[in-house]
Image 1 (cartoon, rainbow, N blue to C red):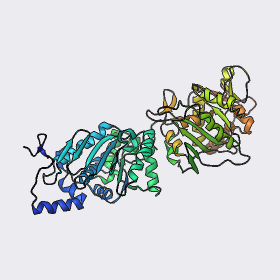
Image 2: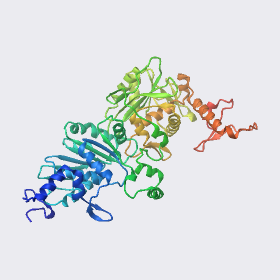
Image 3: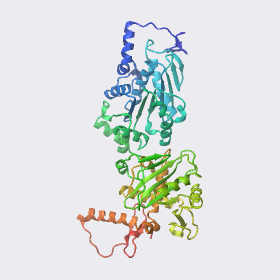
Image 4: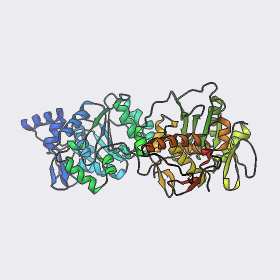
Length: 547
């Protein structure tokens, strides 16, 4: 009994002498050289139908294990219920048993999930023959240590969970479900310690969940922009899954869910402001320059006009202070720069806005002033004496009206985000992006739009996600429909969008013909059920005026 660890007959205590036979030695060496052979012959797993059984990897699982063994960096896009966790666990077990003094991190979006994965590895370890086991020094729910010096830690995927530690191999499970701000901080603080080694490994495995950090890493891997070896597994590679299985699964769930969970499409959340089909077609590109939160996609051009819309955070937590710079010289408009930082203080943020706006030909600035934003706008206006700060005044039923100076009653140094402003801005933004009238190639904006969803008759970020850049775009889209914008730019965005849509509708309907009896109704009802009136003089740009 002294050879047993803490009364567990399946575990060998450290410093226990084991006599090897020639067959044991041969098997040990064969397993060390071939992790697939080890998995097929010595790894046992617990299944729902059969309980404890030997792991019999499918062809794609064998390929994955070999990829893990042969390459330092792996990223895998896999459907649900394909044994992805079991595959990785079998390789990690091989890694700690046959390598001395290595540290392994099992990280998941939740610490409980990571500990459950470690539990699977511990079950497989308990069922190894004693002559293959390393003696146990420590055996806990969240960690274990073997007498060969190898250790395994299970924790959540966050910088704080593993800060100050070094790892030989990191396994990031369901990385697509880790919020973007956590994924960003994790790689910023932990990744350098991994890549500093010559033989360190990273294994990232996930089912897609929108266009987030995992999406970016996957597509960069496909394009050869990073060191990761991409492996894409299709649901049909699992034995027993055919078209009949597909139909049954869709019938029991939904086609949308099947596309995400089994077809592994990078679709965003349900009920996004921007249509999923449009989001799928959008692509991102690397900025020309990056510096301290500022990404520049196009440098300032002479004789071009720019506007900057600003969303202000308090500089703490997960909320970001952000702004976008839009080139409004020509239609379609184009986002040429963006800023996003969750640490900058409101007292310092105005100087960043001021510097960038000056560089873009003294761009017009419209700042959200609901909370701390009023302080930011005040510094830009009074301390920095910036002339092109747009102001708003209340005009009764007309609501907030944009201007450039104090006029009328209740004038403020920017726009207050009201339900009306948000609704009008959101719907205008939807129309402009889906009709390619606002162009951008920024990953962070695309990522936020995939989780910018309808909630309680409004639009906001999905829980755990951010919408700071999305709100900058909402402010921009509200601004371009203002009369003052038309005066500044000689652009009537509403009229142009309507004319284009009107011509398209008439073209689509032309085979059926139109017969006028001279009694046409000068109004129409939109998708929201609101009735709109056409201007009596025939200028269709004012169709947005309520009856």
